[in-house]
Image 1: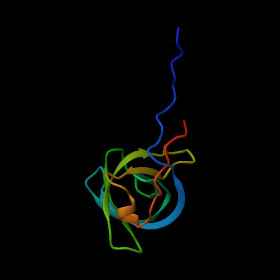
Image 2: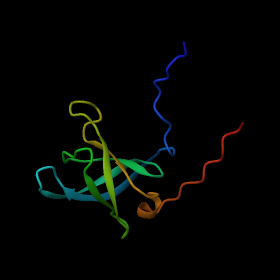
Image 3: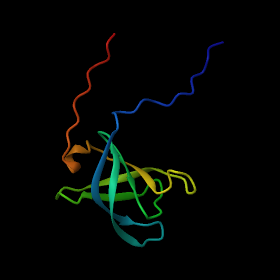
Image 4: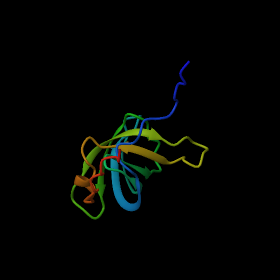
Length: 115
């Protein structure tokens, strides 16, 4: 009998720790609009993890705009840190295109794996 692997799929790109100040805005689950100045903690080619004081839910859409720029993008919440854990207040967001177009950072192309 073969062994079944329970590993998670690999990420599309590596994560980089940064401290990028941004403004997030959107509509909460109770239809109340909000805007908050916060910070991106980590970033990858297609997403980011940020801190928030708002109770966001998976599936919500957020507008994210760097405080030092004019570009913005609509991101989808894909992960929310559980209350009562060290990850409380952290949110993972995904962008449909490369995040560099919003944050103004460039990711190097990954070299193909050595065989």
